[in-house]
Length: 110
Length: 109
Image 1 (cartoon, chains in turn brown, green):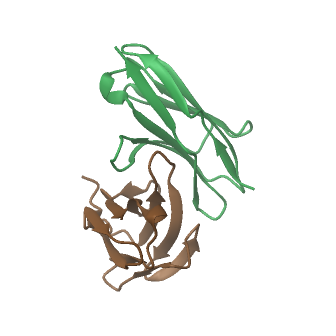
Image 2: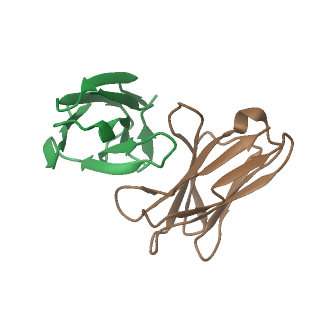
């Protein structure tokens, strides 16, 4: 158990819909990273937050947005969903060196 | 641009040794990480190298040569449970992680 939690574990929705994925970092970690991993693909970095502020942006689509709240949990919002958005979405947190990953949310868009 | 290269797939035999290579070109260097990821699961941290040389941790070792932009992960006494993808990631000058696409390791009996 990495100490990073993500909900929900699975999500099935239709094209055009909007969903929110939630992540709580390890106790004491200020950074949250969001990644997308499509089937048999590598990890694609989406966005990083540090103590409530956006720190870095990767290949995040304009239809996607995120925020980190004062209690340090983070939400990733995905809107106008397309079939190609079906993927595993991971969040990770770290304090100093290595990142610790949550179990992921598997999103299926039908 | 920034780039990390790893073989896409490797096959090895149970009980044997396998070396997974990683070469990188990044804007600065602040450490190299190896992660293991079983299918459908989250990546888990294996090793971290920031200085040249070999870091050993049980059956797994990781080597780094900063001048060559090169690292390898060595897995000894392979077990069936080692079948997984192995991800190489480099932390650049902005302390951002640049990820390789991963190497899928298949272990055969």
